[in-house]
Length: 251
Image (cartoon, rainbow, N blue to C red; front, side):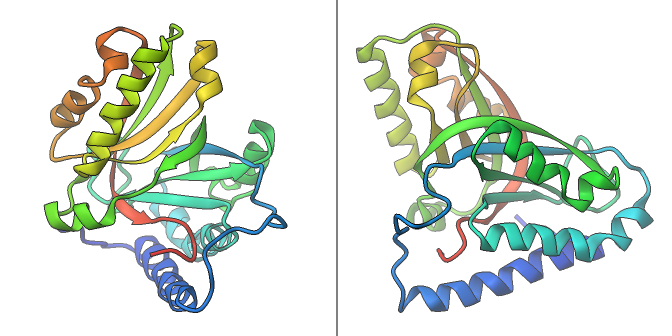
C-alpha cells in the first residue's frame, strides 16, 4: 500500500522522526533497551490520543508544521509518546493532503496528559482537537517478524469498554484469542487495564490496533473475540492508517 505525502507537514513529521529512529537504532546495538528504576516513565499511565481537525486553513497548518513536528519528536524521544500511526488517505475528517496522526502518551494522570497535549501548538492554535482514552499497560507490542511476512495492511484503532465483569474462564479465553490474533499479525500494540475490566466500570479497559484491508474485515476480527460474543464488552473503531513509529530507541 503506497502512501504519498504531498505537503510540508507530512514531510517534516516523517523525515524528522525517522532520522531519529535510525540514530536510536544505532545506539540500541551498544546500549540495553531495559528501563532503569530511575526512569521518570516508570509508574506513568498510558492514554490513547485520537485527533480531529478543527481548522480548514491549510496555510495555518503549513506555517506551523515545523513546530508541530519538533514538539511531537521531542515527546517521542523522551519516551512520552509511542506507537504512532499516520493516515494520509483518510475517508473522514480529511484536511487537504495532510495526514491524520494518532499515538499513545504516558502521563501521571488524565489531567496531566491533558496539560501535555494542551501545551502543543496544534492545540493552542486551534488546528486540531483530541480525544483521550485511558488504556492501562502495554501487553503486546508489534509482531514485526510476522507482519513483514504477511505485508503491511491498514490499521484500525479499537477502543473497548467492558460492561459486565467477566468470569476467570472467559477472561482466559479472551486472552488466548487475542494472543492467537497477535501471533498472526492481525492485532498489535495491545494495552490492557485488568482492574478496569474486573470492575466493569464503563471506562476504557483495553485498546488494540487491528490490521486489515477493510473496515468490515477489521470489525470481523473484533467480533470474533469472546468478550464481544458473550456481550461482555463493546468497542469503537477508527481507521488510523499505517504504523509509523514505536518506542524511541527500538526498531
